[in-house]
Image 1 (cartoon, one colour):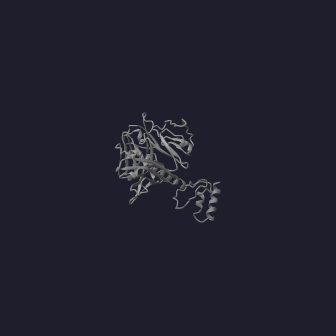
Image 2 (cartoon, rainbow, N blue to C red):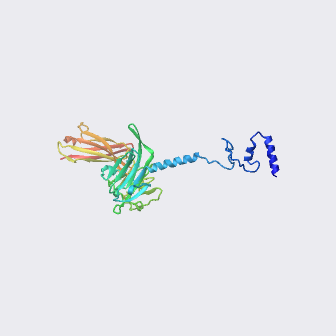
Image 3 (cartoon, rainbow, N blue to C red):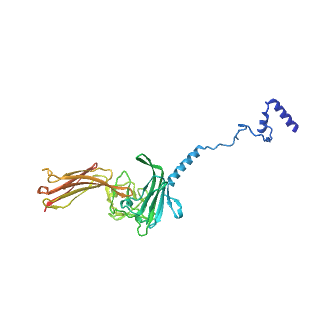
Length: 370
């Protein structure tokens, strides 16, 4: 057998160019493993096994990039714990009222968002400081009213123009629980809810404890308005959400919480006079007010006793927006008619006509002579 192998090697050596038969040995033509430890030349024996599949690398790189991008947007906001430890914040956080909290947002130019009333009343418990690498928000002696969304984002500025960096943001909703305050107090007891059939309406009813069970009631006829999870949904961060408001909801006279439903249509206007009885040479001030949606313009017209005789009066029109919190904004439009020197010709009815794209409303008040 050994003689046959030797003869075969000799024949191969004669048939092949010099040096090539050693390659056949290493490929297993003879059936024995190559034992030569000679260093391989560059490019020599680079034959991959057929049954080994190469794993695609590009999809993994893309997946890793998307994951990293998501992590960056979530890790920008942290809570400072005891002993200098930091904790990444989840979508919601529950703390007992009375506690103080410190939040940090990474970046050299950070903007914060927090419950609006803290700005309205310039609350000294809130402190925001910008450092080289992060921004710090501290809220001391928290109360149930501080319940709400706290978020931050990095600003990208070029000259005088700045824009929000959507990839570097952070947000959390903090419940400051208080056994004495189950509902989040609001600056205003009176709320206006707009019922538009083409967009959801929110009846504000936020709680300080996310596990609280809340029901909605109507005055006439008395009873509970059930939440079915589809058309009417309860969200502890907002309140009761009506996905498809109808006229039936307007007629329900919802009392919990105290709200007034105003449908889309002609202006809802009121008129008031400084005094319904005036003496000669008195100064009379008549005010016509409209509460409406933020983006709906209102035009005013007046009819008054001395109009035909071109009695001189002063008319001023203006409007402003009032932030009710949780995204609710009301537009207050006013028209003020002034009579500087009251005369006999000024006695009578003062009529205000308020008009928008949906129609007009007329209200009036009467001024008599003392």
